[in-house]
Image (tube, rainbow, N blue to C red; front, side):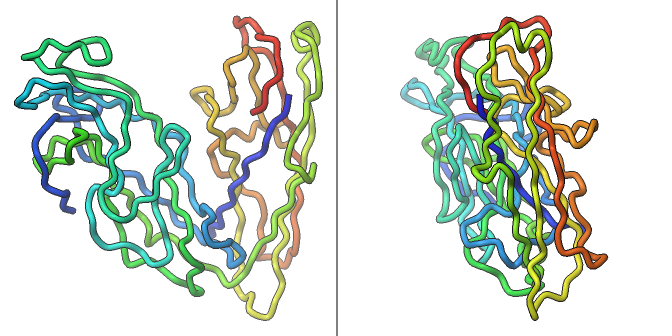
Length: 323
């Protein structure tokens, strides 16, 4: 069994396109909120981050979507779309927002882009069951992750002039409506991102960034937890242009299922994984203090423990797996 490390660093210290009314979508249930937002916290990025790299990633957000009111005049089913960049408007020359849905990244640029959610709303006149359940309404949970990547490297101390960008909307597949009954998410805080004139180099040991637990039996893992160690090292890039002092926070991200407190990763085979710094749980998708480069330190290395254990009350499924 192998643990593939995904490690992201941060440095800390509206109009909608008009269209044809097709369906209504709300947060949680009929009549629920239709305007939601996700805020980027204040942080700074190092000068060594390359073009195309993600500089901020949100935790997985589980969105309870409710849609109804299929008013298609021909009595046909209406597909539910996740519209990316539903409003064509201003964009940032350096920062590219986007979302990850069903394992695929979608940059929010170039105007409205409809992504099929695999859900639909039937018509009362046709009595269609669509994808099952109530013909004239649909409930589902969409798992979404928001991100910001670099289009190109910004100048030192660059701050975006955009404070908010309409990023997604749940609506009918034919068009996104301006009537207010589309569940919309706005990304705020692009102007919270600052650019340093210093860089950071990150290295992980093992060098292939894979923690290999090897082969073990069900009896082995039931008798005792299995632990492997890895290290992460951050080195401040020293050059003539580097004048900023900064503190470094770090987080581990995964697309696997997590426990409610985000301390345990559960791949669905009866096993669970937690990360420890010493004896303290690190957790996933939460930023923790990693290094202080305001005191003259040039490099900081930390050791982590990856601990594999059975999920209480679940059967263990034999076979190889990677998380």
